[in-house]
Length: 124
Image 1 (cartoon, rainbow, N blue to C red):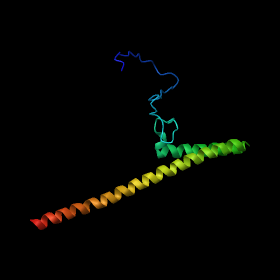
Image 2 (image 1 turned 45 degrees about the vertical axis):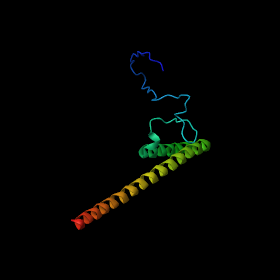
Image 3 (image 1 turned 90 degrees about the vertical axis):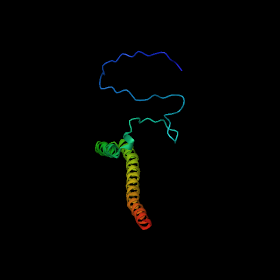
Image 4 (image 1 turned 135 degrees about the vertical axis):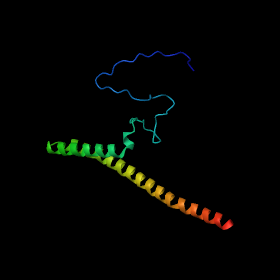
């Protein structure tokens, strides 16, 4: 390990340029389980609202390309929109299952507490 201290000078941000957080290294920490590089580091693919907005953007781009007479580009945009639709459905299902799980846990918790209280009262 290098114990040398790094001296960084802050520079003003230019042209709305955002630095990426994290870096690719040889250990493979930025590789997903399917082997693809983690190109989306800011987590926008996990935000259902961002996914929905992106899906709508590609649907609109497809309509615009179709009206401009470019069916190949329109099909390309529709494929992108379809990808985001699948991701949207996946996130929506995950959210519904977590809500259902939370509801069942909340329902089971008071019942367990009432059983314990009844047991304690019966022993007293």
